[in-house]
Image (cartoon, rainbow, N blue to C red; front, top):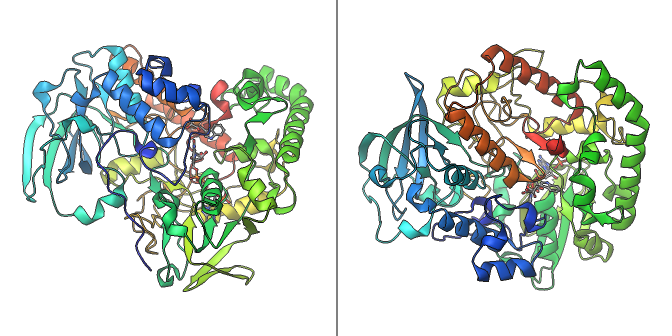
Length: 599
Ligand SMILES: NC(=O)C1=CN([C@@H]2O[C@H](COP(=O)(O)OP(=O)(O)OC[C@H]3O[C@@H](n4cnc5c(N)ncnc54)[C@H](OP(=O)(O)O)[C@@H]3O)[C@@H](O)[C@H]2O)C=CC1
Ligand SMILES: O=C(O)C(=O)Cc1c[nH]c2ccccc12
């Protein structure tokens, strides 16, 4: 099996917006993907003009916007570029020792004396330190920027002449970093070949903020025979150029946003592919840009939509809320049925293209805005849509569970992302995965069911809950999930698929339903470690990260006191029970906020 093409670029900020699949673009209007303190109207005229012309901007434009944001708030001063974090270990006194490798050509070194805002070092983010206060706008802004993508942010400005290191020696920097924001160079996949090179550096930080993103570490299911495939097999994130598919029979695995977009790109006339097949195990509800005669956001980004949801976990045990929701149940069912009917009609969803789950339950997978191109391409025969379960890869294609064989020359796995917190020391990792209490017959706070196990449950839930308003009606079954600590299934590291299941294992539970945190941001019993963006999926991620940054700012300036550890544990446990009842089990279910963002 051949390697996927690697795209090597200079460093810059932007995470997933810096490089992704061919033709990727923002699925929401750019006004919903904007730092509150930096509307497009405040951007330089050239960027502003281009954004005005693109309500749904292309990925590179979003990346430029993020870079422009960094320039505006002069965040370069706080960035360490081309730094690959190797280990984050807790130290006595609640501090963290962060060890990283400064990659050759990897940009600027940490220069504490030049740092203006006093911030603590992070794996790939930053946080204001309690000691000397940065201007809130800059601090919050920087943290929000860090939350945008993968491990991550860098800025070209400091790059010149910094062919850092070259030798593999270990240097111990000053033991206390005043302030910096750390980022690796591009995707992890691009770094593998540099393993063993560069200078190792260790710094001690008061606070670590993990802002490594929800969608950074590619997930490729462990499929037998993958290594025997003769053509390229890659994760969708490594599909930046149509050259890969010219004249080829292309198989795209998955039915999420990336999968449908990649299939449309591969089936375009410009790509000149010989054939394109979308293979998926279950269809998801597409969300058209207009629903019920209105722009989608006028319907779904509202308190009305929030009121139509199953009650939030905080309503548990409150009779008045329970009564209100019981009274509203018929209206909720009606509303979601009307919405589903409208979407199904608008997008021509029939047969296997019509999702079995109700709209609300399905949104817990992440949701996706579609402009109808994929459905149109399927209708016109440019894409063949095949529903089935991938059982094995053969040298010339794939075999499905029902025995069908599909021949193909290229496989694009648009099978989503996982988390990898294996940089954290084992004790911290154990605490993270145990948050909210262990037990309940499910093997700990973070399950380690593989996606396929989770699919078993999805399959079982099948066509129930079609009214979408009461997905909880399926009961609390945790069946099929067991045993924390399985790290399998995270192949695809190195940018291509090597079939080496388990190579990137998250170590403890990130293959299951994720880590359950207090307010999606911290783990009781693990002081000075915060998560921004990497454990929260909403329908407005920049805003969510921005709000989390503000919260953190108040927390670190001691303006905000936390509840007791016991109360936080109880809150996490209540939330986890509710999630298991209301949401389908999947890799990100501990982090899903989605439509509840309005509450
Ligand atoms: N422009 C934008 O703003 C974009 C935003 N996004 C967002 O990023 C997030 C991630 O999207 P995406 O990259 O599409 O990933 P998703 O996780 O949403 O989708 C992964 C897909 O892979 C399938 N899959 C996973 N494991 C297996 C397996 N073992 N066998 C078969 N199929 C499997 C899933 O199937 P199943 O559903 O059955 O589990 C699903 O169809 C989403 O929230 C999306 O909205 C993504 C792209 C662009
Ligand atoms: O803020 C973003 O990055 C988003 O695109 C959020 C998002 C994820 N899934 C969605 C489904 C419908 C609308 C927005 C989103």
